[in-house]
Length: 118
Image 1: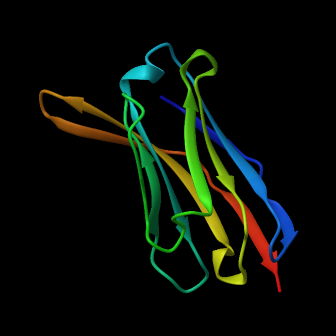
Image 2 (image 1 turned 180 degrees about the vertical axis):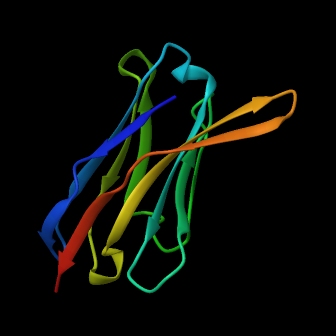
C-alpha cells in the first residue's frame, strides 16, 4: 500500500487543522491506521490509532483535542486537530499496519509538516 499524507500547514495556537492520509489499493479496510509525529531533534512518537473496526486510541498529550477517523470508501484516514499548541509542531506521518501470517507489516507515508505559531 502507498500512503499520501496532506493537510499540514502553518496555524496559530488555538487553531485547527485536518490531516488526511490517502491509501492506494483496494484492501484499505483491512489495515489498522495510525498517526505519528516527529518534532525537530526528537524521536518519532505515536499520536493516535484507529483499528479496522473503528476503535480509537490517543496519546495523552493529544487526548480531547485530536480525533482520528477513517473513511474506507475513500481509502482515507483523517486526523482532526483542534486547540493546537506550539508543542504540536512536527512532521506528521501516517502508518498502515496489516497482520500477516509472518507478523505485522508496516507502511509509512511521506509526512506533512504542521507548524503552530504561539
